[in-house]
Image (cartoon, rainbow, N blue to C red; front, top):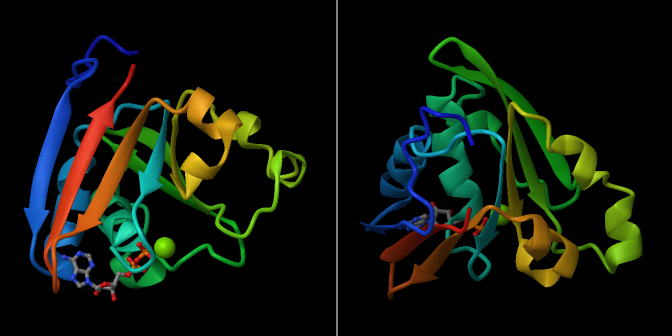
Length: 157
Ligand SMILES: Nc1ncnc2c1ncn2[C@@H]1O[C@H](COP(=O)(O)OP(=O)(O)O)[C@@H](O)[C@H]1O
Ligand SMILES: [Mg+2]
């Protein structure tokens, strides 16, 4: 990890949100917590706001407007070029919900995505052992009734 890393290993960050736009705001805050290279599993039930969070992250990294960030459910992988403090960052947003097994997952070439400038966010990444093994952390979103969500960010390395 680079020497200017603001993230302590094993540190947990928690956020509570009450709307989609709140969660976009959390995504924006996350931009300053994440130092490439990172592979984060985005976990949470369907419709909890995993894709919504990436909208904020992409916006803060100057990689895409929130409207341009859509679910990669069918395309599997979306790639955005961003930057932070003048350094280029590649944002990869994946959704592996529809992927059937490790064999099919291999065709995505996840390993090749992990370049030094990469932030990789994988919705449903917890489905796969190989992704869990490579993950540097996890963002878990849990519904707390209605539009309330609890977002827990954990860095494992
Ligand atoms: N607190 C909240 N955080 C995130 N999304 C919320 C929240 N409250 C309502 N929503 C709505 O829930 C939906 C979440 O969709 P999405 O981000 O695509 O979920 P996922 O990717 O987890 O399936 C959006 O329509 C969003 O506007
Ligand atoms: Mg999604």
